[in-house]
Length: 296
Image (tube, rainbow, N blue to C red):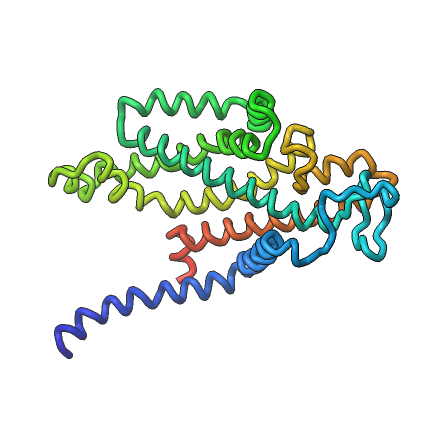
């Protein structure tokens, strides 16, 4: 056996378990596969909503107000005669945009605060007390206050929900930074003259990506649900935005005479949030080294 074969053998042995872990993970976590398929379907519906219906989500037809499911309106109409099928399809765009925006904002803010708090001791106490103060407020009340101060709009809903999730991400990132900032590879980077920014971006942050991805998946789901909650309470995007929360908020007033109004948007919201949670659980189990050791 040549030296090249000897040097390559360990690498091949190291690569093989990863494929086995992925295959075993898919077998042991079929919920993650199902969740991924459901999420892909919802994304396709959001992108191609216009091709799936010829009805406008905002077209008003008072003559067909609160009509039950029938030809031309497979899921009935709402209190303004608008087609519920079309509004639910287009509502996927609003709800997914809100969830994605919340996740991006929360991760961006949490990463910055977490890196600064974990790396600079003099900032740790101040930043973490701010994060603790934010977490002391009930999240939904803080979000309602932000939207009320800035005005109802999809952008303000995203900002309000993103802000309340920043402390969660910051605490996760900070804990990772505290565990790696004194390691030899970080000390070596400092010794060769690397700037603090380079050390944080190239040496510290890569160690935090796994928990960041997991947090992002769950925050995406909570962002979708949070937008629906704010809309249901009447402080979400304006009524002309056909989000699932807006549809459900209007449906609660007619639950006795038109129960079909909440059927499709409620089902869509439930499946989307459930699929994101299943994906997050699967990613967490596959990334967690303790779980991986049990699976190999």
